[in-house]
Image 1 (spheres, rainbow, N blue to C red):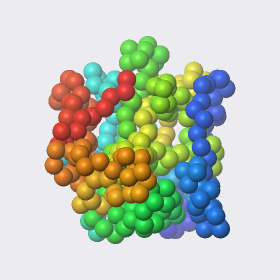
Image 2 (cartoon, helix red, strand yellow):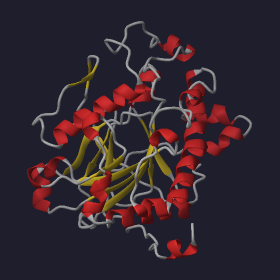
Image 3 (cartoon, helix red, strand yellow):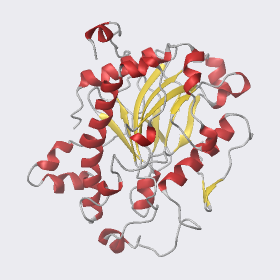
Image 4 (cartoon, rainbow, N blue to C red):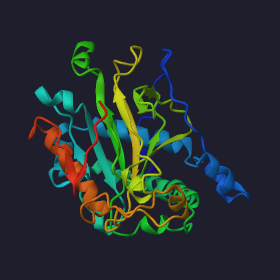
Length: 347
């Protein structure tokens, strides 16, 4: 990429941290660089690297911020087909009576493989190599080591999960640029101050990069909502549905939501930089044969689904159900997702 293109992009400065005293969750911090050290796997397995350069993260935030400043008519040329469960491309912010259901806009950039070749705005094309490099670093340098760690925890072959998340294979992973828009205190109060209702993600792991505007919360096992602190040079990792299915329920999906930020941050937009890792399209969401699960009595014969469901089918079903509610095709969230498995709601 030419230096002139870099020079025209404003640098991104993180918003100030809130001064309010929030009730933060106590999260475990993992240094995954220890995986290559003697005894490192054992040490990390009992806790169950962000080697991404912090300037790279800030640069991606600068791209995120600049993208959403493009004219709406330009962004809509690249709209994703969520009605068919396809999240590739742009999703606009809802307006009018539906605004309370969906107060964000997103641009999802899929894997850089032939399967996902598609049009993108010229702005994204101008920064294509940087975005590709960043995405590949997350997949190869963060996702794969963590999958090996989870395999170690489950006492299965170290590459079992890695071999089901091959980058070049058919399936969808994507980098998301996301922007929540501030609303008046009155408008937020009408929606219970909720910006995104409590939910789990449908993929394997979700990586959330530093975002100092408070609002992300996780639900504790006791059912309490706690704020998530976002350290400057760390990545927040959410376990998602696919990994819960593959681990027989041993590794639980992270229940999370987004709420109105504290008052000293409530008037500014909230940008998010997120990477969603998913299994390959044809991977069946069945528990792996695991000595750990067998000892714990979790290696059960009863199938959770009424018939075999792939990672692709699960993801598309969840996206399509969300689309129907978000766009007003239905007034209540639908219960069943696919094959007898229901969506869980936490608000």
